[in-house]
Image (cartoon, rainbow, N blue to C red; front, side, top):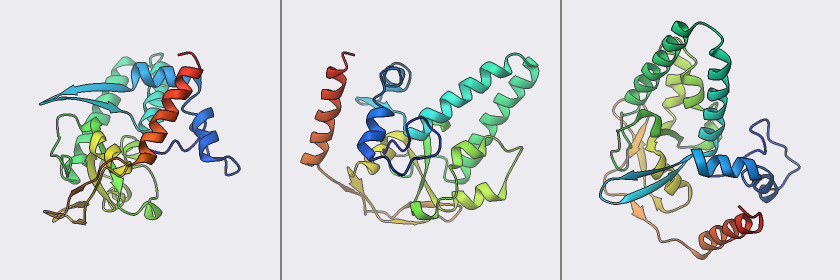
Length: 207
């Protein structure tokens, strides 16, 4: 998953991808924050490590900041806001199929991502905008029509090129995977080189 900006704000076109990665994700405090708070281990048949995506990292931290500020307000309103956010997340994930369209994962709505089939058609991030609505919003529904629902693990693997598939429209809203079209890909040397480079960066920064 690409690290798009240094501080979660508007991207700066004059910066290279590696500079954004080093000054953004590899910033000492930010990388420690990611390691401590944004990596989870899920145990099923085997233990799987999941890393939050770029948008999940910034959305979560902004949500935490908003929560801290909101604590000064009415606690009853805070509880209502959290409950409304949970209801909205469940509502919109159910619209898109309710589970990962590759592996069937559905244990946590917050671990499901809306992946745009065509990134050029993306108008906004569904997860960030959906929780701010008071109910069903047709603009959000229209954006979900462009997406396929994937768990964070399958989403990261797809973005890394570890699998490909042919996507097709669902009977309901959004997209799914055409039966029998999933192709698992082996890691190539470029992936190993990038992982080795990140490990080298962490060691040289004395984490």
